[in-house]
Length: 68
Image (cartoon, rainbow, N blue to C red):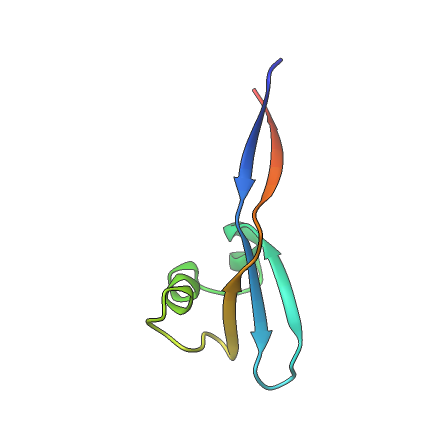
């Protein structure tokens, strides 16, 4: 079986009220935590300042092994 490596986007959310910073690995983690993918991307692209009391920035992508 060949191994394929796929980059996983990393999102960093900073809560503007509690000052807690959280890191999310992939869109699925964002959704599981209750965030909306499109709103996070709007923050990343400068169209929104805050989504669910969080400011957002991109982290370094990580590699995930996918078996095929």
